[in-house]
Length: 80
Image (cartoon, one colour):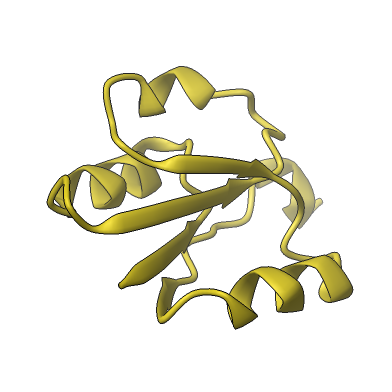
């Protein structure tokens, strides 16, 4: 089973990645806008650097997974 988690390099996203057992196929997608990739250190996952707002790429990724968790928030600077 392939699983996809977006927003995976931030605190909550990396925690969700860590919950999956090692035998679960986990792909993580993040645009590294905050560059917290180190939060994935030691976790078994395939990293995809992309933006979920890139509709064509995101749809291509979703087609190859069985389950996905859309995890994202809005940075404070977007509320100006």
